[in-house]
Length: 106
Image (cartoon, rainbow, N blue to C red; front, side, top):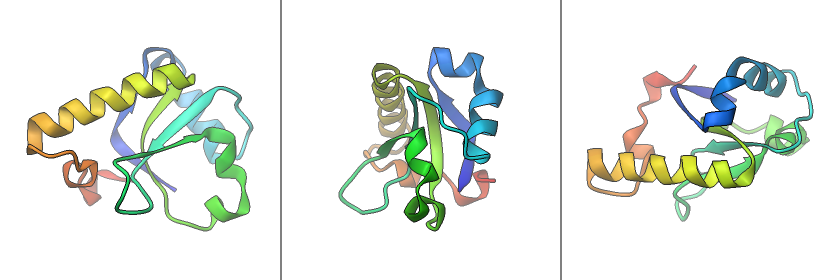
């Protein structure tokens, strides 16, 4: 699991950023916390997962690039909207992958 250095966050998630990230890294269950990740296939713009999904064996064994966090599904949709608008403004397309550079993940 890699984290985008310029992580997008919802308003509530920003207040708890360190706690959320730390708990995800240590496999702690957090109800209502969502992560936005670069898509695992070419058909999607982004993938949105409830954070507890990342504890499943399948997700622990694949490379996921997390670009955003949110508290609640509605906030996740707001973060997604902001990301898509930023992407279109900077690249003229809707490919979030083109907006995020590999060297900005840790």
